[in-house]
Structure formats: C-alpha cells, structure tokens
Length: 271
Ligand code: DGL
Image (cartoon, rainbow, N blue to C red; front, side):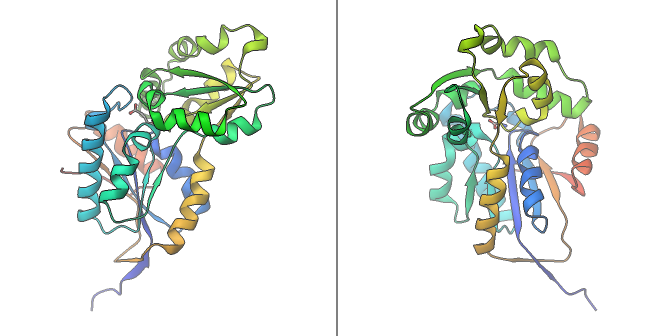
C-alpha cells in the first residue's frame, strides 16, 4: 500500500546566489513548518551589475518555469536587486502570492538618531526608481548616503563557499562611510542586499558605532501572514530542496553548504 500524502505549505526562495539563504533562515525561524525550495540563479550571478531588461526577462522566465514544474504555495523573491526591478511584472504573470525583499529604508529612517542613514546595496538596486521612491517616501527627514558595489555580494558568496572572507576588500568598499568626518557618518546602515548579512560581523568590526538593519525578520512575519492564506500542497514527505542553474563549478562545496542549511538535496534546474 502506498504511503498517505502529507499536506504542506511549500515556499520557493529565489536569489541570484546564496544571499537569499539569509532570508530563508529568518523566514524559517518564524515559520518552521514551511517546506522550502531554494533556487539559485548562479548562472547569471551577480545580478547587481546587470541591466533592467535582461533581469526582468531572466527572472520572469525562471519563476514562471518554477511555478509550473513545482507545486508551490508562495514565492519569496529573496533578492533586493531582483525585487526592485521585477516585482510588478512577476505579480502580473504568476498567479501565486509573491513576497518581495526590498531595502529596509523605512525602519532604518525610524531608528536613526542623527538622521544620517547609509544604504549599502548593489549598483543596480541603488539606481532603481523603486529604491529612490522608498527613500523619498520613508526617509525624507534623513540624509541618505548610498554606497553600491557589485563585488560585496561576491565576497559574501565566496565566504559561504570557502569559509574565507576578504576583509581588506570589504574595508575598501565601505570607505565612503568610514572616511567621512565622524559627525557626518551614518548611525544606521541598511543592508540592502540579502548577501550582506553573511558579512555583517566584518561590517560591525569596521563600523562599531553603526546599527545595521536588514529585511529578514520583517519578511519572516510577512511570509507568516501570506502562508496562512496560501494553498496547501500534497506531498509524500516534507523536505527542503535546493536547485541551481547552468553549471556549478564548486558543486561539492555548495551541496555541503545547502545541507548545512537544512536542504536534503542540490539539483539542477532546467530552464
Ligand atoms: N542578493 C542580491 C540582492 O539582494 C544581489 C546579489 C547579486 O548582485 O546578484 O540584491
């Protein structure tokens, strides 16, 4: 006799690379029963230096395919660079609840005492109208200093794969903050890319007086609400699975890493 099916809420997390795992961790902390699928678009990593048109088409194609081949309850676009460019298009074309991750400008502006807020994100994310509207709508009482560097996501990616962190590289990237006279430095910095929580300890060492804010917990709460309403799927067994695109050079390291995060497998995703 075949095993009875179990009911689950299955959420797909999507990012160009490992950054979305910081969101997955925060979501899982508040939603332990959710079954997680994770899709890395490693073939096109990094997204931070790619154009809008390319990204919209790429992300839409991947997520439309994913929503057809997997039965899903909801999708979390666990990438600020992807969310700030592609959310409207995705919501138009994919009939599933979609939670986006965008820079936590609003909470940071509220928390800042000196009303100087830093926004650390990819160059792509910083250039978007969506991001500028967040600043206009929620941080108009603050001076917002934007620092964008596509390489910081790569440093975080390498750290998770190899365990080695390029501290000197990070020090150089945050110079626009640290080289300012003390009175002009932000007291609060938004980690506007989901990769950055994985180098937060180094950022804290370099800027000990700064409070760093990311979107992880807020997304965890949002997913809780969304998942409550979302449809159940039926499965043989609840298990978290990870997927990659194209060719993964460091397959073994990546497989070990996703297993450490609680995924049972790392499989190829065919577009
Ligand atoms: N993790 C992505 C974000 O939140 C960006 C990394 C990349 O450049 O691909 O913006």
